Length: 98
Image (cartoon, rainbow, N blue to C red):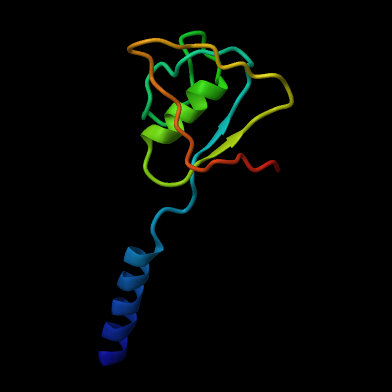
């Protein structure tokens, strides 16, 4: 009985310590500059149903924890400015290239 109780305690402790299995990965598929339709819903999607760099950053910023953004080769000009626009903020000062 004591052995079963001890194994159960170890299993429960493992469940609480493990945490989330993976971070979100957002796949950018447009070079346009458009905002995410609903930041924080776990889906990188603009009103035009594409994932832009800005939308991916907004989505990642709205979610807890670390996320990854996959950016294809291309030129990405972030042109949206002005009052009321969601500012972009980077978690680090450099973007790692993989």
